[in-house]
Figure: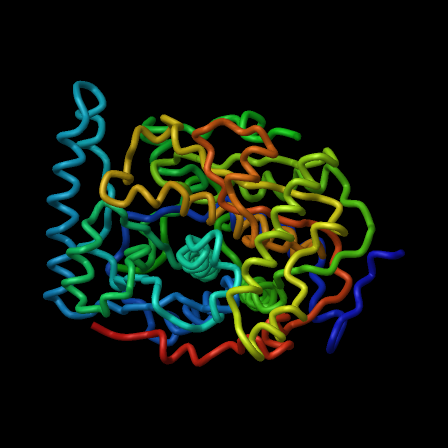
Length: 222
Length: 222
């Protein structure tokens, strides 16, 4: 057999050249978790474009369980920032000595500066997909939301837009602040905007919190 | 302020042109969950390239908790396939009437044909990252593995390589079959190879199991 697949529609539409592959790998290298944003606003159509890109992501049983909450009002934004401040203080209290000192110097959110706050949820109660693929691994439903967040992140970076994923928050407080349905589980709270700087090295590596380690140690053959 | 960021190194290295953005969106549109593979083998260096691309993914605290198990031996492959067959039969038994009839016609795995089986785990016990970002949302550790799987999937598709994510298996059986450490949690079992056909429409949509629905219903403003 050959590996030339049969395509529906135009064959070349589903094919990518070597230059694209090279550039895609460059996109992966330059994607960062951004915590420092300029005050330049993000165009509403551009945000729509990023969500449309993310909507093309894979989901278990084609369930499309992601839910996007564009947080614009000052009150819920403030509630989320207060949750971050408290959770971050508690996290700091969990470290001792040098590590605590180091933690206190890290900038771990850009909630005050980011023009767009996007809370991303998983609807645990959606019947879409008719339960396919979720019986033995129900966690694939929330995993589907993570694939969409990843696509969003890369689509944003390709357009010079930075994304920061904030996890130092209390999910219950965020759900309350945003008055979402009981069946929605918070997967990520994203800060979105134009980064102050671009860098190929992750900030946690630059600041010596945690370097990238050898991939060879993470691969085994069975 | 302007939105021109300060870059470390060559400014143009972190910038992408309009043509790339358009092609990246096309990549998202043509990515599929593949269950039908040709018998063309996958070059070992190419698999290494895909894992290297995935290794560039974001992870909470730079924890890099993903673990790749390249499943080559017949015995664990057979054990996984048997797990799929049993779990799939149990899933079928959970449907009734027309839905059961429909489910029985779906091809939900390509375990027999795919040249590469890649089991992807999360190491729950890795100290890497020093716990940063995981105190209130510990699930971000497994989510980090999902970001890596998504990058792997897109990097593969850009190179004409198809990926199918199998979740109709018993994770405990897969862990046993692969003799992985107790602290490793199965996140995904991937079939990887050259797809028999390319299509812009998901197979579950083509077969009328579950259509894509209106993204406008998944977006709200607060």
